[in-house]
Length: 174
Image (cartoon, rainbow, N blue to C red):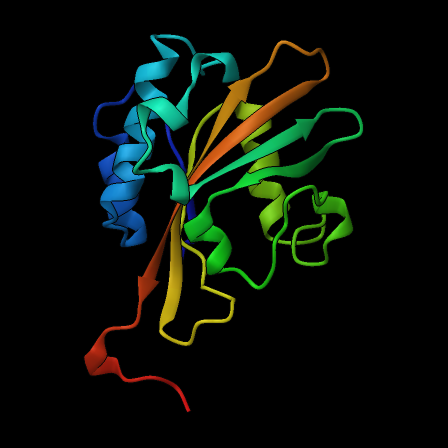
């Protein structure tokens, strides 16, 4: 099953088509993308300085991740992990570089998705299997979007996360 879809934010149907392809239905993902899309104001991507999520989208803040992007050598660092996301991960990743984490390093399935967003400047929808401490979660729905920053050689990425719970009728694994 496909776990990610990169899409053109200028195509009015691309978000809903991508979500349908991945079996995603989270309103948090739609709201997060809409926030980013409004802030880009016709540009390829918004600047980090254009965003004020604390004031503008406080209800989405617990579901956000901000990632620093270093271009040379390419690497990614967790800058901010929202409280809802953090409580559903195995640990706090703030300050960690992807290259130093086994599940995030260049040989992982995660790194190429982030690199693709850098290279193409397009958002990516993702629906990977959930790996973490909660047995009732089966997947993660997220949207990964690029941001520019004023510092040469750097960029940022913004993600909005939602966790998919196992349906009661499916039961829990032993």
